[in-house]
Every structure is written in structure tokens, then in C-alpha cells.
Image (cartoon, rainbow over all chains, first blue to last red; front, side, top):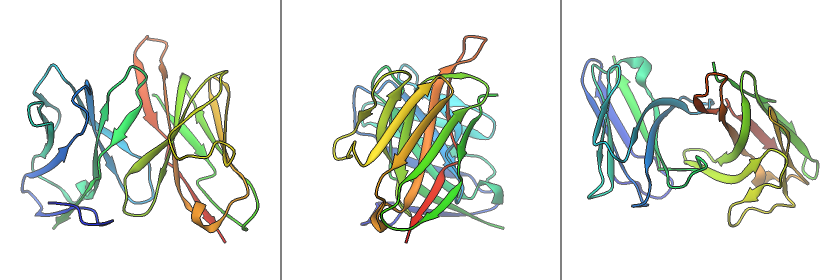
Length: 112
Length: 118
């Protein structure tokens, strides 16, 4: 969903469903993208990454899709579990020193 | 592997005092460390980039005299919030980039430090 003011976009799913979290990035020159999971009071945890020369990458239960034409990134989580509940951020890297720009984040809530 | 430790994990201080936060790479040498600030329900905002042995590069709008960054060794960077005020209360997160012995690049985040200024 769209972010309004300071409120995080939210996504609520039932346990076992698939989740899709979207992210629009800003820099067409970005060449590397990462999805992070952040639980309350903790630092970001790496989930999966993708380089700009790819359009899809799969991990364990997660898939990242990259559409450079519209500067859009998505994270798909299969068979979502309560432990997946967290805020998810996309991040883009446009230079050579791993300086990351983070997206707004999406709060995922998994209902048992 | 590739562990980054931040200390303290939380700190409460009085307005006007200075607070130092440490970021350590435990099992790799961090040539570059990044400091972020995160307000509640918001994203991470990059404050500065520090390279070992050189001055930090600050993002636009971040006061370098307010947020002192020192990266004196390949395993330690410190952020000092000087003359802290309540508006400096935030979650400060560092990340470290370097290479493991294997040669693989790593970029890892610390667990964050919660600063509350009274």
C-alpha cells in the first residue's frame, strides 16, 4: 500500500499464505538490491539480494523480483509463518562503496 | 561469521551530556563502516560513512560537530552524540563492510543502540 505521513505500509496475512511485499526504488543507476527483515528493537537482518543484471532470484521460501523498467522490487515469502512478522525494507546500492539507501519499509503481520 | 557488535544496546542520558556508541566487527576487518539513525516507524537514514584512518563523510543535513565519528582501527568505529538533546533520541545502527579471510565481501549490520535523552 501507499505510505501516508509517518505510517508504515502494512500487510496482514494468514499463516501459510504467500506474502508479496513491494518496493519502488529511486535511482535507475542502482546496481545491487537487498531485502532486509527488521524485528522490533533489532538491527536489519539480510534476507536476499539481487544484482541489476538479474530479474529474479530465489532463496529458501523467498523470491526477489526486479523490474528495472519501472524501478520496482518485490519480495515473495512462501508459506508465511508467524516468525516472519517484522518490518521489511528494500535497500539499493548505487555506488561502489556499499552505501545503501533504504525504502520506507512494510510491516508484515502474520496471523496464526 | 561476519558479526558486528554494538555497545551499548541502550542508553539513557541527561540533556547536555555526550554519549559514545561503539561498533565493532568481531571476525573480519571493516574497511568501511556506516552509521544510520532510525526514528520510530520510519526507515533507516544514513548519517555518515567512515573509512578506517580517514575522516568520515557526512550526509547532507547531518552536523559533523554534533555527531563525531572515529574509525581508528579496522575493527572499531565510534559515534559520539555531543551535547545530546531530547530530539537526538533515536535508534542508531551501524553496518560494517569488509572482507573475510576467504576474500568474500561482507556487509553486516549491528543490533542497534537505543538512545533516550531526558
